[in-house]
Structure formats: structure tokens, C-alpha cells
Image (cartoon, rainbow, N blue to C red; front, top):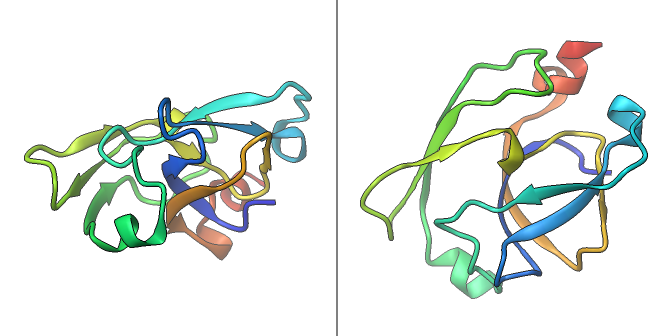
Length: 119
């Protein structure tokens, strides 16, 4: 399972920036959900490329809403911040499926995760 709430930066599907997650542990749904990497970082396919980027994230404070998220991310390779929405965020407890790897940045841990706040 994903150990913390995180913004999805890139996936093994570099062309489309998609990954699949199982949220059965969170909401009981058994269908896989498609999540989207941030447009500004979806082409990252190695640790070296990731190491050349810096990220500045501004986002909402921890809250219990599992189905909403607002924030922005700005990189040193983009002029304008990009909006973050719920399709770019992996929640603690979801399980990665049919995806070889992902890169992400953790936004909430422990008692601040959306799942914990929702309990």
C-alpha cells in the first residue's frame, strides 16, 4: 500500500502519465482507478531526471475529504504553477496495480493523511 498521501509526479507510462490504483482498502470499490501524473513532470523516467527538478507545492491543509484536493505545483522548468486536483493525488492505503513504478512527492503523513482524518 501507498504509505502516505502523495502527489503523482510521473509513472512508468511516460507517454501518458497514467497509473492504476486499487482503493478497496479506502472506499470498498473493487474497480481500478486511473490516476494522472502532473503534466509538468510526467516525462520523468529516471532518478537522474528527477534530481534535476525542484518543486514548490502549495496546497490545502490536511482535511478528511477523500474526493477533493486543491493546490499548485511549480517546477524550476516551468514558468507557471500547475493546478493539482484529486486525480493527481494518491491516498495512503491505496495499492498500485499494473504500473511498474511511480515518482511522487509526499504531502501528508501519519495523522494528517486524508484517510486518518476521515476515520
